[in-house]
Image (cartoon, rainbow, N blue to C red; front, side):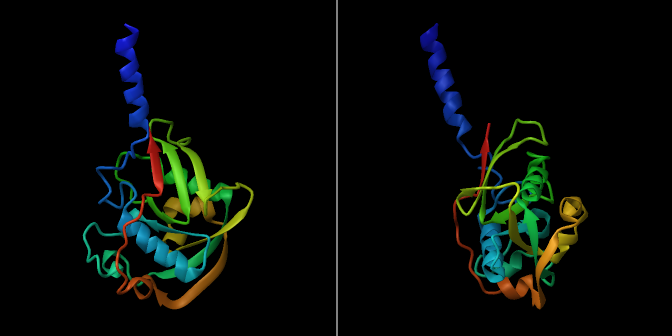
Length: 195
């Protein structure tokens, strides 16, 4: 009997390391998307921030891979950098996966962060690990996060960062300006889901 159970246990352990997003990576409002992450990278680099967020609902599923600006639903949105605590960032990531595996226009495409979560955990306790630049997130430390101004004001997240300090604004610079003509690069997904 033991020999029959052992392979099943090993199989379950192996399955738990498989990214839960494997089949949905082309939908930016379901899970992490390599192209959307590349756009978040460009936003973070432009703003000189610790990280960047783009909401999945603000991105198109189909676009020209030679021009990241074509993925934007709201290309004229301006860019802001908020000063957020690690606790606020953790709350945002919990909000991002609270409806998994359902579509969620608030799912965050990220840059500068790596997030590990358990898909079967309670919706308010799914995130089990966050790294910022390879270092564990400090809930008491402040970080700068670039994002579209629409996301900074969005009802879905404004309760989390309604009192956050705006560190930088880039008047007359739109998301389209930052992403225009930039090609998509494929990188490893920054959300790691576990069973």
